[in-house]
Length: 105
Image 1 (cartoon, rainbow, N blue to C red):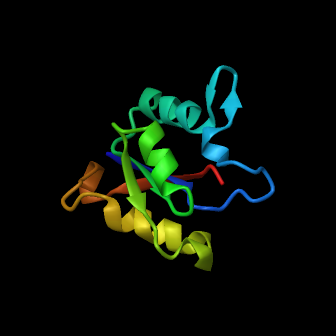
Image 2: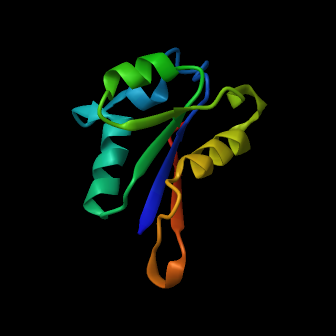
């Protein structure tokens, strides 16, 4: 089993709005990434959000979105939050778990 951790914790200050919710080819960046994760049969898909947690959660109510309260301390804190959110006991081949980490921010 491969867990996908999608990082979306930044402020997107230069963009003026959350990058995860920007439109690309008729859907948001985050929806595009989630579709790729689903087609690759990765599960679970875990989105880690920080500054824009409320708006991202509202836009994707059926997706597991974890809040990283330490997002201002850097991307590594979002990676850590995502890894902590991977369900206990998730096994892959040989008892290992593989995580794919994809930044949106």
